[in-house]
Length: 200
Image 1 (spheres, one colour):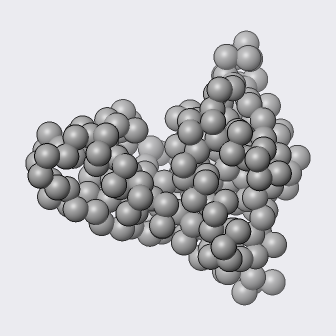
Image 2 (cartoon, rainbow, N blue to C red):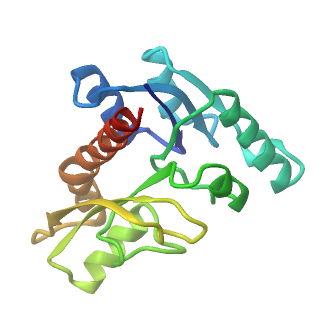
């Protein structure tokens, strides 16, 4: 059984997609063990608790130094002996020591077709604003492993989404979530869970 932890900063729609996929059997051999947010007001924490998943807030604001925050986060993750960490709209930079502690065991969902519109500064609506201002006809989402760079890890899955006439960043963001993110993030977790099953 793959023990999965999810790190989130906001509403947790990708977290909900994972919860729904576990419940419907699209994700097998995996259990959501922990949800951590850096934001005490994140609705994602409510989603977790409503589904009997341990949930907590570990915020950089509550620690004197960034190092103290990193240590607290790592300690919490280690306590749950996680096999996989999923970044689902987590807006805090992952420290190198965490990448080292979980090699090829951290994945991220990014709302573009990497290598387009990714890297430092590209997150949330900024990605969709950039795609629209560039005039692309196709965008999408990417699930990738996390390395020490920003959006530079090995790509696991991608799914394309059409840009339509009259799209605003908000409309495009919603379509990319519905048609790509909520589909490929659970798929990637299932792929990793089934690989773990084969290894044992």
